[in-house]
Image: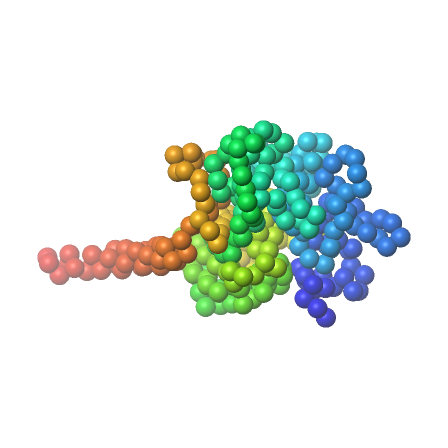
Amino acid sequence: MSRSSELNGVDWSKGADPCSTMKWATCDGTNCQCVLRVSSDGPGIPLNCSALIPKCFLMKAEMYRARTGQSTRSSGKPTEHAFVDNDGIYDPDCEANGRFKAKQCNNTNECWCVNSAGVRRTDKGDKDSIKCEELVETIWVRLQLKHKPTGAPVDPTALRQAIGDAISKRYGVDGKLVNNTEYDKDARLIMVDVVKPKTDRTTDLSRAAYYMEKDVKILPLFTGEAKFLPTVGSQTLDFEDIVVYYVDEKPPTFTMKRLTGGVIAVIVVVILAVAAGLLVLFFARRRNRARYEKTQPREMDEMQ
């Protein structure tokens, strides 16, 4: 059986729900074609339900549902907090294949350029003055997950394997792309790096990241709404927060003075080596601080 037929643990070849990767899809017609409504008129966007739906289509659907008073949570209207956590959602312009167009304006005269994940990477400007020559590819996604308290310590080695397996099975990500996982047990933080080759224009990392954000922050986009709950040993990990960092093949061009708190909910990391170095430094300092706090009382006793 192919990976696509097993995505999210569902075997569609055995007659499962026709669009398990998109709970808002409507499926009808002779061939049971599933579509996603993004406007009040028109036939809707045809979907490939054997894969995750492109992020650009998902954002358009969320904006449409919000405008028409439909739920984006499947259990009542979204709260203000849910929208704040919705990572700067806007009504994007999409290509026919679901990729973001390089230039976005959110139906206004103010525009900006985005990366392949739809994240703004330039200053905003007048519609006629902003030029976006190409869609810059996102080649690295860093997932920062915080799990809820557990009844027993989490084994770091088993955790790395469990997280990689869970991401691969649920979101269809090639396990070879999950190339680094770090764990800070005191902060309950898990750092996962998903990196693709710079020449890869087929793998869309933003899809898996967006589905995971919805899994943790609001409700799953999958029809069954089963949560992302990796099993580590005998424990099941539940998560309370997630932050996604996007790394592009080219640095962003916005000026830092234009960036204010809350403007962008995700951060585009510029230099890969620096980002990786910061992660190592982060965990090293935590270990050193913990070691210092443990040895300090012993040293003071010896001095007395």
